[in-house]
Length: 228
Image (cartoon, rainbow, N blue to C red; front, top):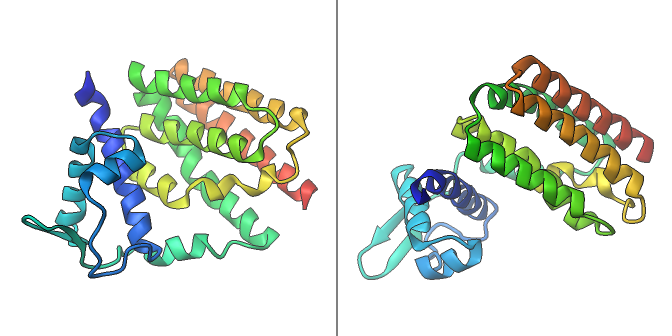
C-alpha cells in the first residue's frame, strides 16, 4: 500500500525542493539539508526524500557527493515563473492568474473524473472534509482550498498537472480570502462549489467535472472583483 502513495509524496517534495532552489533559498554550490532533516521538514520518509533528490539529480539541478551530501548545481528553468508568482500584486495580476488556473484546472477536473482511483478520490474527500472544518482563519482556509485543488491534480494521474499547480502554490488563491475571517458565508459558498466538483469527479463525468470547475473559478473571479 505504501508504494501506491510514494510517487505523489515524491512529487510534492520534489516540487518543494525545486521551489526552494528556484527562489534562492539554496544557491548553486550550497549544501542541501540532510535527508533526515528534509524528511522531518516535509513529514515524509527518507525514501521519499531520496527519490525526490534523485529526480533533481537526473535533471542536473543537484549532485550528490559520497559522504558529504547533495549540493545545488543550478536553478530550475522554471525559476522565472516562480519569481513571477512572487510579484503578483495588482488586481489585474490576480485576474490573469485565475485565467491561467481556468485553463489548467478545468481540464484537470475532467481528467480526474476519467482517471481517479479509489485512493485519489479518498484524498479529494479528505481535502473536502478539511475545508468543511475551517472557520475563522484565512490562512487555514487558503491551505485547505489549495489542498483540494492539489488533490484533483494528483487524481489526473498526470504528474505535470501537479508540477504546475505546485509551482503556482497556495499563493495563487490567497487574495480571495483576505478579510473573510469573519465571513462564514464566503467559506460555505466555496465549499458548496467544491462539493459539486467532487460529486462530478466521483460520478466519473468528465464534462460535468469540467463544468463544475469552470463555474467555481468563474465565481472566484467574481468574488475577487467584488472584494477589490
